[in-house]
Image (tube, rainbow, N blue to C red):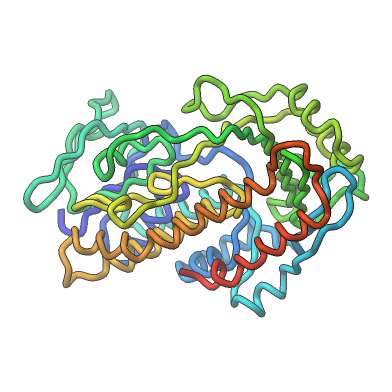
Length: 396
């Protein structure tokens, strides 16, 4: 049991925590309720605050094989197509923040993390293992899982638990009172398109953000530039089953919502043959360190601070959490509860700030009422968002 950490959830956050803690001498055991380790979804933008952390874990070479380095961030008016502003990435990110800006497919990043976890030789992985009960004893945690035909555990003990089980976290109830995530009223349509399927004039090496009234679309290359990741967020009624979060999309609804769009954007969207749909949910910004850890249990990523996607930092904050957890775990002069409290004190305010900025950006993107989207509004929005970058990308 010495140095044992049970990590509930085997997604990006859980794998990041397993790798980082293993590098600090822990013996992680990752339990995942699904039958395979995988990531659903599509692309992720990774700012230098994220890539700096991943490089420090020794992932640079593996990442270079699957990521794309966009040349710039280009904001365009979704109705007129006008350019509203440009932020150079690429070499500028390296010069300004000391680390690159990458885009990557979620499954590719997850596979890189999983491969390095397996190579560490210190992590135990269990699939098809839902957690039923966590009970805190005097010097350890007692964790029960469902009895399964394949012989995986029904009962284990560990020094500590990390809840990395996402938006609908079952671990969260042991740290803060159980409440349901809140519905934002936004639907994200996601797709992955081979770059070769587009006319050459519409292929891109940029992160392109199209903004308009109640519409927000983000397009960028992934998988070494061979595919285009598309996310279109609109206001719409959410499906009844929110936990079943990957839905086949009704393309007609998206076509109606984007009827006003500029010809370039419409041509790209029309090329997509199949969309997936995610109702977006979040929670209010973290109110204090007590919402991220209690006793021997700590929360990470969406289990602690799910956020809207308008600052592109959901996965980034989970990876930062993992790095901080590992740093605190190395404090062998402290008890486990003290280490986790130190972690929560170090992380809660930054996560809350990113949550709040993400909410603010989304409110600007999806303005209500008859006010026409104007260049001055978009420029102010972009200017305020770019002001976030120094504090965000410089790291916690």
